[in-house]
Length: 539
Image (cartoon, rainbow, N blue to C red; front, side, top):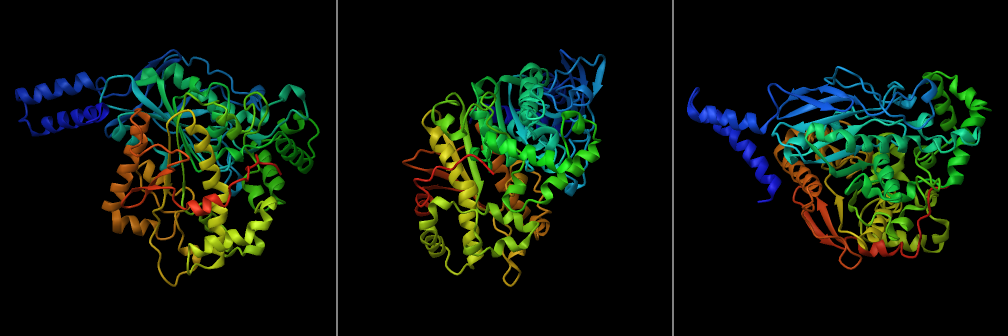
């Protein structure tokens, strides 16, 4: 039995002993003493950091410290600037409820406040320090979502994995990802301020997580979609092992990092849309006005360019060069990586536009122009592997491979030269119902693995998701438990439980109700992309 599993078993056994022993008996007293010695003091949830004391809230099996500031508020003189260090707060910070996240796109309601550089910490109440630390970066196209979304609650993972789990908010949209250096050289690099926020949070973890029972030398960063793109960018930086030993990249390959030209053109589009001629013009806008400008700037865009308008860019310093090229050269040679995708990533967009599942081959305009001579041949192969599926479904399988799966495998191949690397694919989906429209019969879409990784099984956003959880809860809970175990085992340094990925074996964990390992799955389709170097994002 692995060491951290022994610790988990011991804590459970002590609690069981306490429940079974007669009240007031020696057995009960011994169990209480054991729990007190191995748990947090009293009722609770307190930590002492160099910034001041922190009081959290007791939850089932863990302490939660919510809304802890990791950097100074990016407001006033700090607006559009790199994150500044958090000043000591003096006294005790009551971290007992979540704080609002960063301002989101108006399409999501525009919720949030600019004073948003906070993080949440969940620490098991099994006591002892030096637990591995898991830091999550949320997705949302760099313009949506927050650490406060219920699906990102790290409490279950902390208890099941005997780890300290952290998630965080970072600046979104124009406020965090628009390059202002073209207006004023003093703001050069501001288009990566959201990435700097994430790095500042990881620095905070290194300085302070020991106070919460975590080991600052044993950090795993994991993220999905935009959060995974950020991690990919970090892997291309100088010495990422300074901040984390392991990384999990969930549906966010490195080629979605922007080129310098793309970052410049995106900024110019914002400035032209808003009549912005100086940073002062932008700075005088209220939060609401910034979001309205953001909405107008993106209103003229369509297709993938709207979804990837914001994001980290290759600035030559924070991100020195293209991700896969840098990783292949050994930029992350000291970091273990796990990377994966869902089987039907692009089905996700049908939640907002059902017509995407009817995309004909003739309308597949994002297909690489340099591969035009093999487009029909590739379609024929994908179609032959999916007999009976309509054209739109086959095209979406190709699009999933182009945007997510194949670039993820390229990243894994590059990293496998240096450190143990693991690949997965999430295949489970809400069961199909014959006769329903395609948009009501989604496959394993983008984001679908998250409710399983965190253990909450919040499938409400997917058609018939809540109903399926009610009907299949035991089976879905087992799948979720296995995934949480894999993620936390990886964070403990034990590997996730399946063989390493190499270009020869291509070992891949398939996550379904009965998980399996497949070697080189869909390899005939993967090989069709050989010879194509996925470029960094440029539009």
